[in-house]
Image 1 (cartoon, one colour):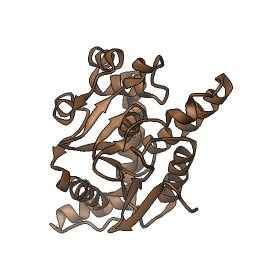
Image 2 (cartoon, one colour):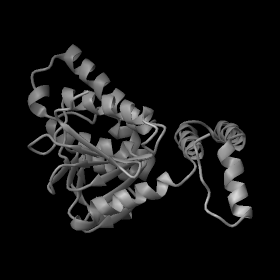
Image 3 (cartoon, one colour):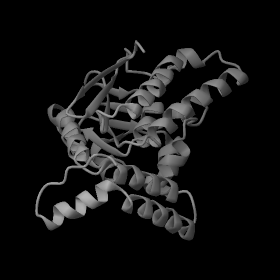
Length: 259
């Protein structure tokens, strides 16, 4: 598929996806649909083991949704867009490969929601985060109210949602919204370095680890432990498990094949 608003490059088993939609890399129906389609392609590509998502330029990761598209929508139109949005975010969140957000500037509204869908988040020192929807008379509609409270707890989540104020990268790090803050020039290389490290891990184990964490977060503890046990048993039956243990005993680097 040809992409108008996404740029994708693959090197060393890492796919780097850049959202390119000036100004601000804002999200609209086509961008969401392109993200969903590209994620499906990368998920099926055996040469890709990890994915980095970033925005074009140094000013914005994603500065939010395209209000020009939304302003005249009726209720049915908004319901359709919300479903497209949810499909795109869920695809990233549940992808069977790790996804890292390289947040290179503003992450507002839908951009903040997009970052929260990724497994890991690295921010440049100039990154900013906000849910400004309350100032527009609406609320986040792409999972923001739910994913942010899982990340920071209800109290801080309500502070961010109710006031709609902007926080900087350091505050986001203190709140554990992002895993690391780096200089602007080091952002993409750091994210790719993390992704390349993940490509060396057993892919089935990573896939099942992600499944256990994501699914377990939404159920009671006993159910979560059952999910973990089932995932563990499945991984234990793989050839990669045998290779990993053999490599440890033989004091060598494992050669995982995803089987």
